[in-house]
Amino acid sequence: MTLALSATAQSNCTVSGDSVRVSLITCYPGQEIYELYGHTELRVVTAESDIVYNYGTFDFRTPNFMYRFVKGETDYMVMGYPSMYLYVGYDNRKIVEQVLNLTPEEARKVQRALEVNALPENRTYRYNYVLDNCSTRPRDIIEAAISTSICYHDDDVSTTFRTMMHHYNANYAWQQLGIDLALGSGLDYPIGLHEQMFAPITLMQAFGNATVERHGKQEPLVAQTITLSPGSDEGYILPPTPWYAQPLTIAIALLLSGIALSLCDVRRLKVCRIADSALFTIYSLAGSLVAFLVFVSTHEATSPNYNLLWIHPLHIIPAVLVWIKSAEKVVYCYHFLNFAELLLTMLLWWALPQCANVAFFPLMALPAVRSLSYLVIRHKCNNEKTPRSKCERKKGK
Image 1 (cartoon, rainbow, N blue to C red):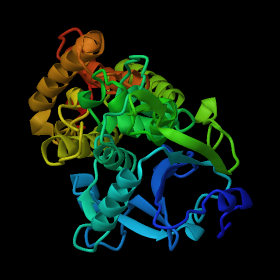
Image 2: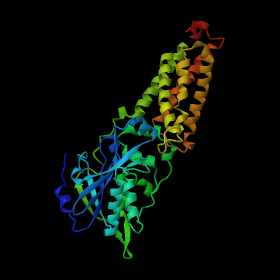
Image 3: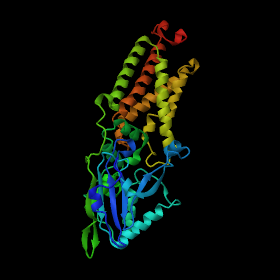
Image 4: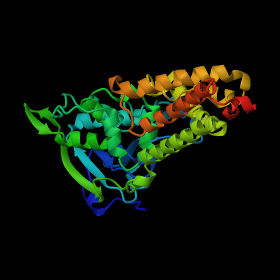
């Protein structure tokens, strides 16, 4: 682990007198979940100090950290530390420094803003993963300090938050499945370059192409680009998830197993209550988490979430009542409504303003198949032509 600046960085970080040099530091993606999008920091160099400001720190020891994080109370902090620690935790990851073309007064504005932000009484802020994060905060400070507006020279390329997340999660299929399940249609509206800067690499590229007006002409925002640590432009990430371990593969395997079990149940006119109880309990628990995010969490884009149409807490009804003989009519009505609702959801999802993970469709079909098999079995058992001895209900099961 490198604790000191490289020779290249050292040779470019000297300033004289009361000068202030401000740089945007971009760390490329890493292997951990919280590293997949990369990281942004600001570096301020004077004759007396060389400080890096990081808006991406948080404390796991905070009481009820996980509950508060899921609820949306994501309190992050900005901290300043000597640049000799810049590389700590970034082994094998590319790090790029962009020295910004700021006037002396603009550079001092950035320095003062960061020093004030890093005070104990000011350093905590409510983190938002797409609108207010370690990348957007440095951008906003730079924009506020520059006396003229920054021209980003974007190509007016529109995308969505979810599309960008898919790019960074390309090798992490299960991570993306969780994001697609937990976050709703708020990730699927078109966004311009300014919103795309929630991703550090996009911010770095935007700054690299940006200009500011100086003395009646446009000058580059970035005066110098330095590679502090070499590495892949793709980041130091894990290889893709093998096809046999992908969510879609697992979902299809589960669906095929459900179809096979349902055909067996229909043939013998018996509902496998253990399988249904387990399946709908799992869907109910997952649906409870989605419902919590929709109705309680203040996270960005958790509501509305149309996944509640197929995975929701009400699945606990058949999971429990399938064991109660007197509740047979209630279970029948539930499965009728569940099958109809799931079928419509699968057929009409294209009309909803929310993109679905491709693995969702076999996962939607699985409970639909189990509901259909229950309806078919009960229909046959209620048919006078079916021998009563074959029906599970007539056997007292």
